[in-house]
Image 1 (tube, one colour):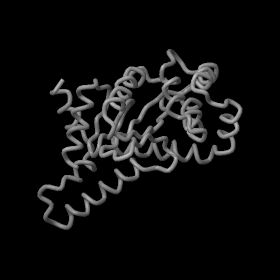
Image 2 (cartoon, rainbow, N blue to C red; image 1 turned 120 degrees about the horizontal axis):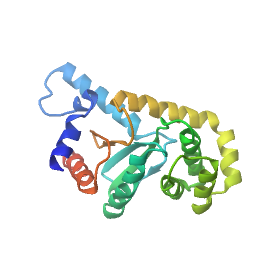
Image 3 (cartoon, rainbow, N blue to C red; image 1 turned 90 degrees about the vertical axis):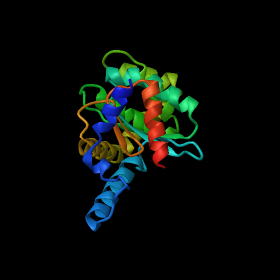
Length: 212
């Protein structure tokens, strides 16, 4: 598993690696570092992206996922376990609906649930669904999470332009990072693509924390 972790870090996008502080001695290196940090900030901080931010957090994990992705479903309990065991991890949920069918409606509904402050329970209920996502499964997840269905529909219509813009930004960021599928994560400055287990995820957080 250590080899898997190191391999994941080795796949970090060049823009992220440009943020290394060691050995920065020329203006060009400084500009690349600053540009990389600016991109990371845009990915980590979006006013509409659903976020869980404990007080005093020191590491941010940005998760790119699709509600119809089997690997995302397998990874969700791992992320929940990390959040339960590490009170200083901030998680940014970046819905990236790339599998067609119900992926787009599920992503829009999840984002809209945040307007009711019910994103996290709705996300957990929806990601736990099996098979292809349809309206019935979205509605079942909403009921399980205590989401007002009528308001959810209204918010998706009223704020459609905002939601679509967020999805477009997320798609652009995923392409910038070189992600080819879900799940994908940015843990601090590091890119960790694909499904990982809890020990690997904890090592990635420790690596990011060590960098400060």
